[in-house]
Image 1: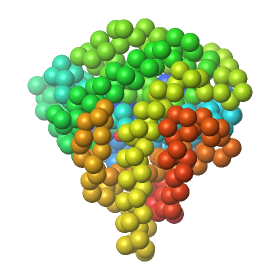
Image 2: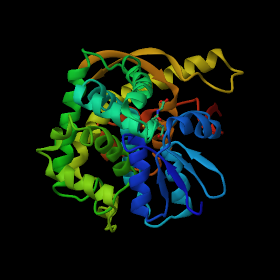
Image 3: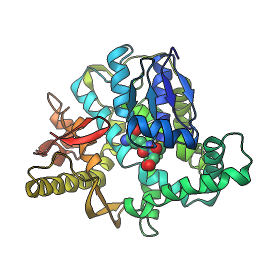
Length: 355
Ligand SMILES: N[C@@H](CCC(=O)N[C@@H](CS)C(=O)NCC(=O)O)C(=O)O
């Protein structure tokens, strides 16, 4: 093994993020689809969980979490950079990454598991990957087990009959807003993709576009389809938008980020701080701190307060220095600008720790 091995399935959104990133960077790698046995054996042993993507480096080191995988390769291969040098564009890219990773899972799981055609397709994909070469009557039961775990995330994330239409409304708006933006720009922040592009591509391509029951969501959005193709195939980088500017055509997207997603993150952070006050000696917070009210597309639900999301939010919060505050406030980011979290976490040994 002379090149990094990217362990992933095509159905996985976070793996689509890292795969498209590695391709764009021109970093040689081997894409390998792990079997169920490898996921529960080697991979679980290496990173503590049967999860994807993982990257196994030639020296035997393992990487997990799509953001940390990208950070690793950005440090080793800085050009062409995917984090813009301007502070406002950098923040914009990290906000889109945060939203794509932590909020698009609503759309991912809703459209895949509540669309019968997609669910059947995904189960067969799980079967082919999980037990390669086995006849479907043998591999489908294994696949159904994996699927039922994924389906089980729906109520925890607040994906219900009540919120489903809200998730669809938000997703359709996102696609329309992106299409209008991409009519004028090749990528989110100009002529080259940022970490926000790769993160957003993950769920849009691996779930919504690739799953056959929802491909039609893209029928009216030719610019989004062209953008998906560019991110899938790799492109020659152009220039960032000049002068650290954020195109006004992205304003509706950021308004959505701050309208419904950011209040949820604020609730996670508040819950983490309350929990921390009661557990001053703890070195790790639980994965979930109970449930909270939330809204998506105007529909109300309840979802778990996930401490992982607070860790991801730190990346964006830490990038506020030197930014154009007028832009941030103009797109509804006042609460984000003012947030002053007192509890921090860090990833060590594939686990979050309180720092
Ligand atoms: N934040 C992680 C999320 C990875 C993730 O949730 N991967 C899914 C597949 S797309 C998975 O393997 N889930 C297994 C599980 O939740 O047990 C990342 O960015 O790598």
